[in-house]
Length: 180
Image 1 (cartoon, helix red, strand yellow):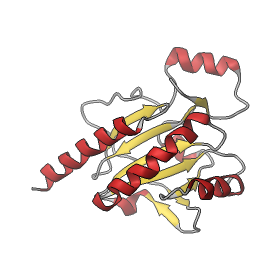
Image 2 (cartoon, one colour; image 1 turned 30 degrees about the vertical axis):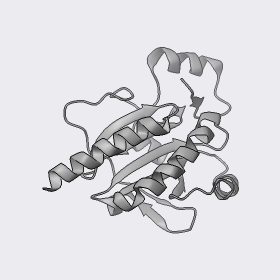
Image 3 (spheres, helix red, strand yellow; image 1 turned 90 degrees about the vertical axis):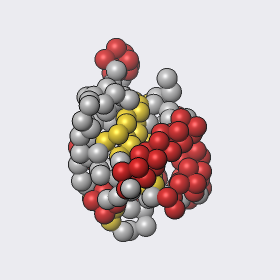
Image 4 (cartoon, one colour; image 1 turned 120 degrees about the vertical axis):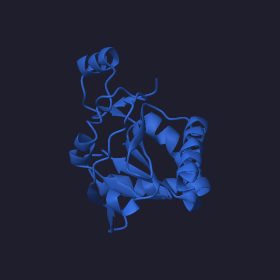
């Protein structure tokens, strides 16, 4: 599993606990959902471009909420795939949102995002949004939110582009079937 702890200063003990307990986003466990997915909590954070991102403004869309940091190697590894998938699925109602956990804020995030050519909204979290989603003790952590703002999937650790594409295609098919 390719993961980073949510702070570069986290202890070895925390890593051991995360590995033993499963860590990441709080129950249900990563990739596991109860029969009735829970509604994703709304939040509002300033984007890198100065506008406000509100989850509630994206009703009817599939939102890929990715908790990440510039210092996290698996986070950096998955970003090119996210850029490609945003390009591929953006016009079909999929929005990626990068929720940076960098303590230094946009002063660190902006140069990295510009260098990478990130084509989706980037926000910086002070921990409040991560808490709404059960915490992000392990990075990267990704939450797939369906068009009715229901949490459909959680992934702790690196999310390979092909696996995410498969999940997005399934959610888009389901959205199409429900729309008929």
